Length: 380
Length: 181
Ligand code: SF4
Image: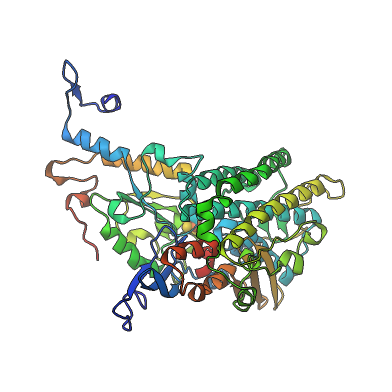
């Protein structure tokens, strides 16, 4: 089996070796952590990845540029649209394609809706990890509404492939804008409910406050990104630092935490949902305006199969879990010569080996949950 | 008792009430089909749709499907996602830990045959290469409704099981513990 499936040889007499995962309801997939504990205290924790390695980066080389898109959905499957977007931006840069403005707004709108859906999954499962099951039911109720919106858009619930090279797959269907507004108006006050449900709960707070502290310096030096980084008080967001699509025209703030503990990371995500709602409203307003030609959702003359000129391009987006980058190299053929993915989850999970040391065994679940990793992206 | 009487064809209530007669097959299969406890075991994208099936809108629990976190208490394993080669060993191990009778639903294209990763070097092309599968559920990912349909199909299969001669739903199950390589 794996390298250290059995207890290490240097285990002391009063220590115990625990295999946390790969089949464990709190690992959010198939992560394995090899824990050495002394009583309740973790002495050593090694994350062991690769249980979902699907050889994605190699498969990109065997697919054309438009076929490769469906693989990106399956990287970070909880926020598929961001993956589509990052990939398309990289390929567009490589092939010199410019998506029309209307498509850019639709892309941002879809991405923000997906961010809400993704953070809702986090909210629900983090609650379950901490022993609170009810928030899960609330979160999934709202999430189903977003799934419905996506189903209207592109037919897919979870994996959308809605963003395509050169634009989006289809224009907004009739009646969609109203449905979307209806949802956003319904959803905004729900965030307060979530606060009463979970954020203010004394048990929840005592399990997250001051647990798994990551200082700002350490967060930066480990290369963390996304809410995991911002929870430590570092305000870095690709949407602000290097705006893509139309983010420079939109008005929003980037919530940051202070202490870098589990609670801050959790609360950053809750606040981000609020901002996503704002962005979505602004996009809807812009799409209703006359200057964006209805029906112009795809760049003209993008064929199904195309050759990209030899060269390389890198594009990154702010996905729900952090800075997601795609590095594409072309040798002038129909397929990419190399496609590298910078998955934020993979980099975020690495810090576990440092912050797990010295914490209590029950906190392992809290810390892991607060990093909000998706194994599809970690293992690729 | 009302539910039992309504659902079983070969049950007979004796006059005066309080006592009912049924064949053991009917009774056992009734119990078995109405409490299909799956193992919470998410592998990849399909697991998110499986979670959605447990959550508010679809409410899987009304069908008696109540997730168990340990294989020792589970009847059925939803293989929800891509089976990477590194994961093959743990899956066999978990399967062996489940008590008989045990069932497997292969959820999604990946678990059926490799799905979108049909040509990957790192993926087991179908979970039936390593453990026996009872119901194949296609889709990428299958909708939560589809997962419910798969469970209904599994229940149909369970109803055919008999106690006599140790016959299971499938010929393989008749032999007791399935032999795995
Ligand atoms: S079948 Fe599709 S959705 Fe399911 S695990 Fe495989 S790639 Fe993901």
